[in-house]
Length: 263
Image (cartoon, rainbow, N blue to C red):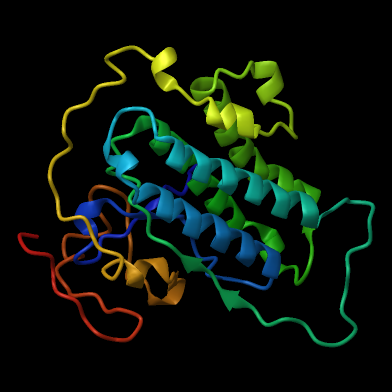
């Protein structure tokens, strides 16, 4: 069995940041508005989480990042639970018009160079959820998603939440494994990894200095990129060929941007 690895967004000047996008294979469009909505919400939030300074540190994530992950997981769960249709329930069907298929947007995310192992594992599971969503056959369905789709995609979200609850909040596994388990405000406010992690895990060296992109720099990424605007992408760390990265990429406005200094 072969598997589709995440793709490296090796486009100047971004290659050095180790950005990844889900492996959409040849599934560039979807007729299903719910799946496009889900991938957009999850992709944008994951990108924001991994640009946070916590991703460059090997110490446990701050409560700021934990709160964002908590909200992302509960948001994705609510979308899947609220829109999934049981197998025995007739799907909504149109009498005349069908929605036109639209392209997925991808949000290149600094996954490959994340130093924080908690965030890298959570991000990997989330990227799997995005890959499964983009390649799922229900992208051909115009309106509904099934419980089977929600279960397939939701299992990765549930695993992220379970890992965070058991490892960072010491919630018993049997409680954290419940499908409807949600961290309370009291549990979030009591977050204190120093109480159970070793002193080695609580100390890190200063991460290598680098030019961290500004909000304006990131705009071309945070707006989302239609899949048809992507160049040929390959796997980390080699890419699809030796020539990729030597040709200036263009933004969505058609303007080229030069390589970063020293790139």
